[in-house]
Image (cartoon, rainbow, N blue to C red; front, side):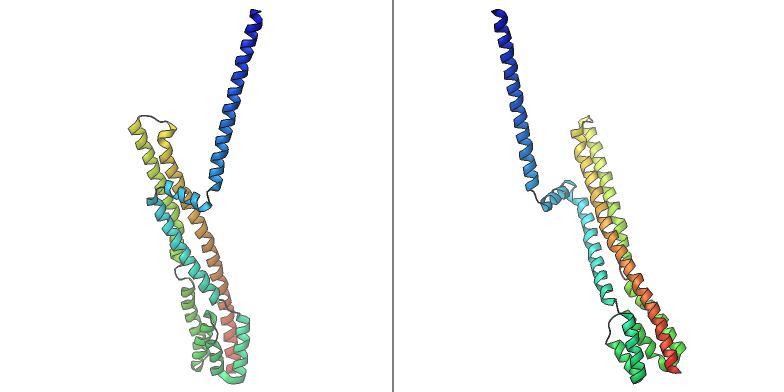
Length: 250
């Protein structure tokens, strides 16, 4: 009888223990689901804002400023370059028709009514036509260099921000590691809790700096390719203009 009671007691204790474990497990799962739901309810803007604050606003602000200035320059250049893009084939045909029908003045009027650097270069060449084809060609080459400078305006600043953003992020990394070691020295312990804050600052500033550099690099490459495309069109159109002037002079 005693053995039976003992077995029943042990079984009851095991059952109670399993019930407690199941309750604890259920509570943990519920807590995790609540935390997960709370995280999912946060918008991307709120998460980004929290990371910005965790990375210390001092260094993160510098990285953010490079992003804002870099994007401002990139957007301005993209708009300018898209407006500077001209259908050079159509322009050359219009200038050729104007030269044949109304002479140099009619061709200059066509260039005045057309936007873009190619039309401006054509106008400068036509304006020197009375001095000879050689002077017109020199004017085209010289003014082409001026237009190239206008196309590449402020692009060097964009490359500066691309280099500056990760450097600022790495500076935040160094500062965060210094803070972590200072916390270790003050606490006399190397537990994860002591160094977690400094390491988090270091990683966040590095990540944000690299993200800014990647974004600006994409815009920079697009702008450079756009400039190259316009310059190639300018060179081809300039050769066509010189040929037109030679034929017209004859």
